Image (tube, rainbow, N blue to C red; front, top):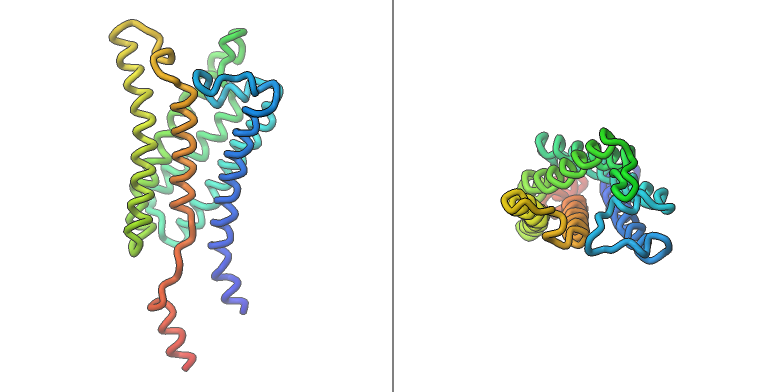
Length: 226
């Protein structure tokens, strides 16, 4: 019985991590439903805008919850030897990036406060986090799901979609640079960032979801017992 309980611990931790992702996403959604953050435009304003409001603590809690649960679930995958080293590194950068986002709020351009250095760190951490997670998932899919082609395909597809959202932002930056425009006005930045964040969380949940032990893996133990 003890051995069975120990075998279930990684799966339980993974399930708890997925639940934490859902709670974090729900908290961000809640911010759009309660004042004063209900006045923040989901179309043009980034998610980090919530961190400049009176509901900052809810935003911080949501991001830290996702960061901690990401670290735990990725560690479980690594201990199970289902996560390559390079993916573990990218996953660590994703987690660190989230924590930096909380520690250094974005610059409040409405009042020009927040500190130039802190605002720069926030932007860099955001880019690092949003780039590193899909790369980690793309590189880990084969190792994580060696016998599950459907889940491997789903993880890769979601990671590619995440990079696709990012490509929209990069494209806007390039076009704006050529035409001397403000890139964040060329696209619905708020929707793009929220779409990217949601896609990445779903991709991470797919990667973290426990795999069912195959019958063949249990046969040797059954043979010995017989």
